[in-house]
Image (spheres, rainbow, N blue to C red):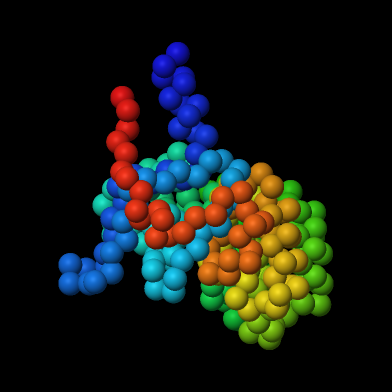
Length: 237
């Protein structure tokens, strides 16, 4: 009974961090310390902080892009430190949708090809998602003409919507968004937030921004400085 209880509690978190410490090098002044942080499955979290405080670095640690750290990071029940880089890439492709601040679109591919790109890296191919893709593109106002254009030919706002569609496609368990509204005006920003949260109802969302006007849309609002001031905890046997 005790083991079953611990398993249920453990799996109720999409993200669990304990005693995380990161620095670029022993000579660097930058330090990122997060003693303890958990995000429940399906929760929508708004994380804010000053520029240069380490928000993007934290996202890279969570998604397995950055590996130099001590402590424990559990993502969807997986201890990220136990995976090789290739396994991390596969895990990310199968489970995490990422909206990068700089979009990270391949300029020579069409918008549609960029959206579908992550499918190539999935260990399990999904062949029945064309209706879902059409629905996402319709809500993001990505018509068939735009989808056929190369990413380099799109406006900044259009590239942003393509990056969002790519992250939402396949209904990932965790969606990470790094300052995704920076190129949008106020009205479009509100529409984007509503679209993201509506489309990611069953997913956990970790949304990073400095724009506090967006915080009220989320279940939890946290400052990175606040996270770093919490006391550490140890696992109870």
